[in-house]
Length: 398
Image (cartoon, rainbow, N blue to C red):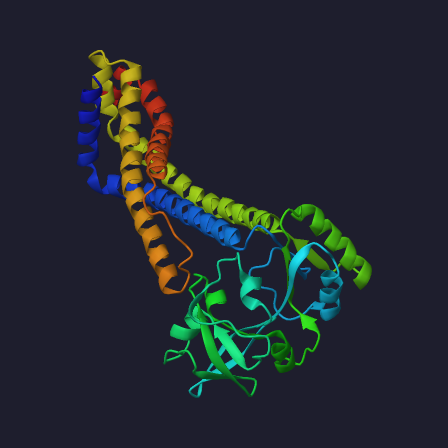
């Protein structure tokens, strides 16, 4: 019985190939958009989680207060050396790492590029960075007194300029020459990989901000409860500064903020994709209504020779389900290709941290089942209309 229904439904779709093709396209667009958005969204979420895990579980970050989650590193100032001194007096930290981050023109072989310049404390820099998966590809770390040296990001060395910057080459920032003594491994984020790390004191001089600090990283001692200490840091700075225009965050809190924003973005984008899928569903419904009108006589004859209403309804719902399933198959393929293209494009652009899972069996199954169900539901009303037709009226009409 089911085989007969399928054979009959497929034959009817073949008889109106152009209309069936145009109807399928609407479902393809909706399913492809949903598959691509979910794949890229999951990849982005996994990448962000991985990056925060690399930040280390023993760190607390103090930053200027912003209206929402930061989209990148804190730029410019907002904190001061006085804040650093106040935190250094607390007994909970192995290191108190102040950073100054801003953009400046970097010159290499007379070629100029605007890059991120990070001022960092030089003494024990290697130990300060331990635990955050920031390692050197080549070279070494500076000593405490090497204020005219620089460590550069991966893309600064290999992509920013026409010529590759090598160890012992010199670059110029703010009229000062810096000897490149190290190159960091690729992080996978252009904002971090297109950077130049110099001494904090020198960066403050170049930017004319003697005591300014963009961010303070606190490396906690073993056994310290990060959440409790974060609260104590908040109270200490409120007392010393006389205001609360700063934020104290643990990696878990930062990750939660990013995930909240990402979830909202995903809901909005999937909502937009769902609208296009709804348009496709309306297209199926319209196509099936037209099919009912075109086959009124055929339906009447089928009823006259004993076909049940349920059989008539099943025929049209199977037909619409096949349209939905076909749209799902091609939608999954197109969505997977889009995901693959986005992943490749991100890698070429320097976002190698974004790893999009092109083929997720669970997501593929969801796309196919969802498209089939949408098709079946879209054929429900037209099938009910077909059930209401009376044999005598349909035959008399023709």
